[in-house]
Image 1 (cartoon, helix red, strand yellow):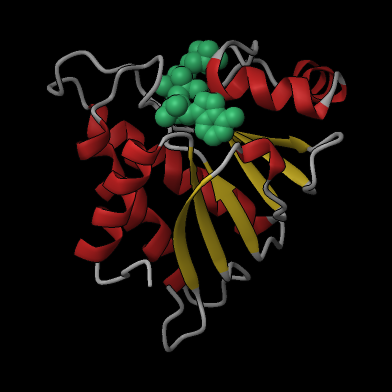
Image 2 (image 1 turned 90 degrees about the horizontal axis):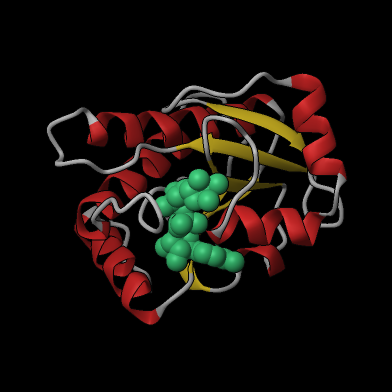
Length: 181
Ligand code: AR6
């Protein structure tokens, strides 16, 4: 939804590797070693330059933080590799770490002059974070990033892989006062 300040936060059902944006957020791991899920899909679509840049520039990334590379063959300028937490029981700082991963990812996008960002639902696949808890965190961080003074960010899109995940994000957007339509 577009608001009076001209910014947009939205959720769509899509394969994130097909969505054009200035920056694509990846749900990475601490080793920045690639993997399954969206990480595997992004590396396959982007090509080998992504892994080459990760190896050259970074020695891993702590949970709750993010790093940035080019985007290879993706229709984007940057990939931001954010490391969300593995869900244990919710009592090990998982929500705060997820919040931090989104915050760092959106901050890196802003630092690199991005206007549009597309993100998956970090941690809610292989890492097992319950999506009903994760979606409001993701949406709140997007709204905060778009409202920051002087930010170049204009639009944050969450690309969800299933109708069920999309419905959870649409609900979170509505609860945050940013309904989908
Ligand atoms: N486009 C959009 N969303 C996708 C796509 C895609 N192409 N593929 C999967 N998803 P996951 P995590 C969704 O498991 O939980 C990797 O091995 C998926 O349905 O990709 O943060 C990393 O290397 C789910 O809703 O990431 C790490 O080791 C969401 O993306 C670990 O998995 C995130 O699921 C990270 O686990």
